[in-house]
Image (cartoon, rainbow, N blue to C red; front, side):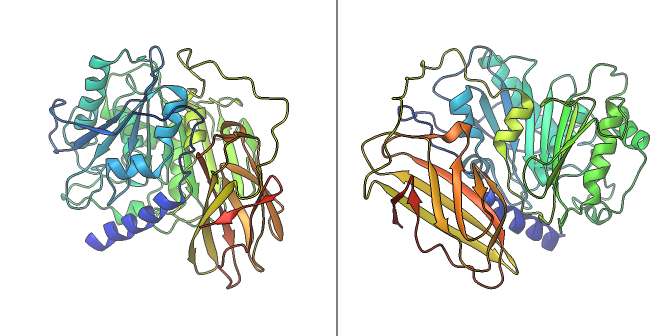
Length: 431
């Protein structure tokens, strides 16, 4: 069992590098910091609670519970994902639960964890939610959960047990509620992990309904992400989650909307075609368990990607922004490679004295490398001289501020970095 947890954790530690990094919002330096909270209420499994409250909290703010992967922690989830940076922009509050048991995996398998108020981790997490609600004017209709791997499994559990609390969830590489159930005290269920537990939609739905008997109210919306090459929590778990959540919403298994938000991704929506459909599922072709975590898309699905009224009014930019002058940009570039694939993390720093409003970064991709997906920018073409262009939320780079982007690519043996980078046509320094 320990080896399995190490495999799950190793994949997700790598994922913490691959996740969408926080972008620097062009605003005064934030004084907000991650804070540990103790004595927050009933906590039968000795979880730790970390809280992030942005400097500018929206009126009636939303609350996001961000749940880490095996071998991870609340602070690692905070530093390795974009949820805090987006909270700075949109004014919501984030809770990061943190496991203290040796596996650092959340309990999604015991009978206690799979029954409402039955004990174990879900009870401790609910105490964290209640603690925040007692101290901040949280909008009860805007409480959400999101997680990676073990945290994605817990996202399914939280939404299943507390449909009257959570409005929606976003699960990255998870399994359905109840799939990991065991009765022998083991935290690991190989049959579920290997995608061998297949049930009808009704059976999956009944597992959730029986965990909270008598509840007849609305069910939370669910967004789920999965790589087709997931070697740790196999891809069939993606379809089983869709079965479960469409059944809980009384929906057909036939999508009402299908598109491809980027190359290799297939997005299906059930019960609606809009951005907040009851169920949204994103299949990622060729992607392993170490998948890129698009926090911005999770926040979009939650419907909380609007700037709060308390935010300072935006300044009007000049009609055109001149390109940065020589030596006014610096590029950091790191690669994590395996077999025939790699992920590249790129940091663009404005070292000049003028704000950059709208940017494109051009670089010659080494021979044999082909971009298959990316985040925090659009990429074209997929090989040769590639240009990464800003997306809506990171178009502006203030002086001394940075934007982090990245992409996944295939390679034929050369995993090196581009020889040069040009920002808006001007060559940047590297390092």
